[in-house]
Amino acid sequence: MRTLRLPSGQLIPVLGLGTWKMGESARFRQEEVAALRHGLDLGMTLIDTAEMYGQGEAETVIAEAIAGRRSDVFLVSKVYPHNATHERAIAACERSLQRLQTDYLDLYLLHWRGSVPLSETLEAFETLKQAGKIRAFGVSNFDVKDLEKATALPGGDAIATNQVLYNLMRRGIEWDLLPWCRQRQIPVMAYSPVEQGRLLKHRPLQALAQQKGVSAAQLAIAWLLHQDNVIVIPKASSLAHVEENQAALKIQLSPEDLAALDEAFPPPAQPIALEML
Image (tube, rainbow, N blue to C red; front, side):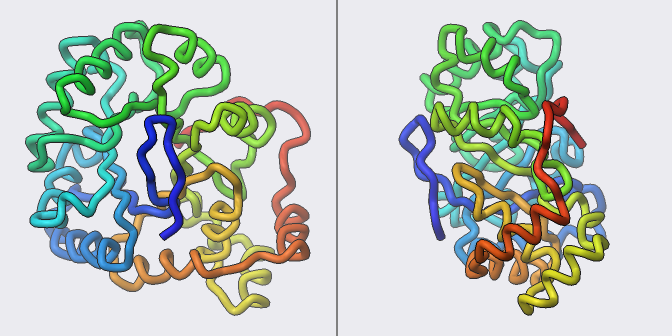
């Protein structure tokens, strides 16, 4: 598995496992646990979650999946903006740790910008870090203006990543956010790499994937993996889906492939407001 180095010095896998919507139905729980375990077996040791996902139930699914294997996993969770005060962020982190049945997170993120002053959230993150509850912290769904404000605050220079919506259909961050993060060596974590499945119905992508003998999902993920300073966290809730995503690591994209994808999904020609799902 290829890795990137975070500003904290930690190595993080470039391809991981997303868990949005996991834990929402007991009917699918064992399938979800099995998928996560299979991903770990295939070297996809980065698992991303949030207290929001299944109102905490996604974290309990992960706990079951990583039991006995915590040291192999790079574990990421996120705190709600309304829980981002000093006291509430610490309490929220403790609840996540309890659900995940671990005593630390590798990375803890503010899920999106809210009304709580960023300075207070950063103070909470620093307190958690000093206590050994988290090893690094970062943000999610921050645009350049938000990042500039955050990194100018005490502790802001320790922001390790920005998790944002980024895929072939959502390339707006290439105008300013992605270059800004690259210049400061802050990796971008791309969520919804196949646009919750909608991207897979895109006929030009299907045609290009067929020409290369891969699936549309694999081509979309491979394109993101080709981007410098980008981490990809597709969700996969079945064994076959996990294997399909992992195989994207082996896909090589030629200049002709990249040009064809640019033609089908043009890069931004002007600033675009940060998009969220």
